[in-house]
Every structure is written in C-alpha cells, then in structure tokens.
Amino acid sequence: MSTSRAASWTWGQRLEIAGYVLGIVGLAVLGLEQARQRDWLWALLAAATLVVLARALVGEVRRGSASGRAAEQRRRQGVESARAAMTPAHLSALAQEHHLDVGTSTGRIELIKVVRRADRRLTLVDAKTLVDGLER
Image (cartoon, rainbow, N blue to C red; front, side, top):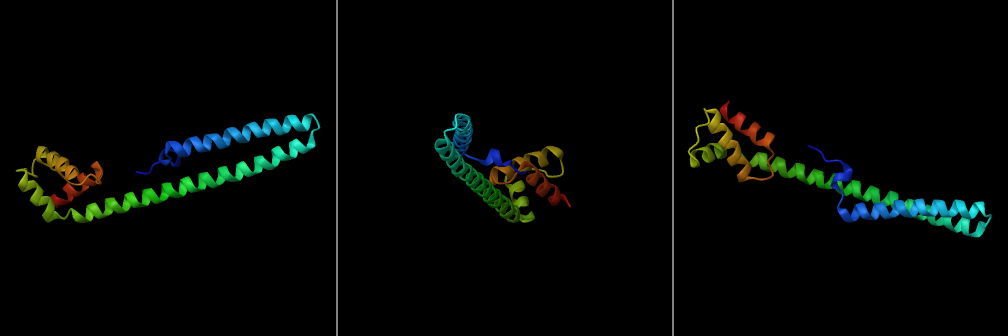
C-alpha cells in the first residue's frame, strides 16, 4: 500500500507550497502588468523574484517527496520486521493463549485480530497471510 506524495505531506508543507504558488501567480500578474505599462525595472524585479520563488517551490516539492519516500521505506521495513517476528511457533502460542481453534473459520478470524493487536504494524492482509501460512 503506497500513499501518494500529496497525502504524505504535512499541513505545514501543504500551506508552504500553497504560499509559493500564490506568490508565483501574484508576481506573474504583477510582472505582466508592469511590462504592459513599460515599467521595465519593476517588471525585471518581479521576474527575478518569480524565478527565486519557483526554485524554492521545486526544492520544497523535492524535499517533501524525498521525505515521503523515506517514511514509506521505514514503514515497509517495520512491516517486514513484524512479519519476521511472527513465526509459526509464535502464532501457535498466540492461538493457544487465546484458546482459538485455527481449523475453524471463526478461530482463524479471531487469530487474525489477535495478531493485528499484538503488532499494529501488520496490515490485515499481512496478518491473514501469516495465519494462512500457519495451516500449511
């Protein structure tokens, strides 16, 4: 399960990006109006500031996507370590501890719930895969 880049950004990052976009649009309008009035000094200053804001926006988006990728990689590593910790012996011990019969569908469903409660990093699909592997 992967999250989109925009979904992984914090509200502060989203507001900062919105500020950059608003500034870029405002400076583009201001620069065009100054060029229309043939006030070249202010038009050039607006264009230079526009370039600086655009570079800052690109840098912010790159940082946000890089931190999102790093967070996704840390999450995946956490899930993998959680799956490795749930050995068949550990799953059997959990089933016995909670008096669950893995041979029945109700027992399997309850064991999936117990496994997810035991380690919150595991998704429903991961827990189901582990419990299904226990039967084989």
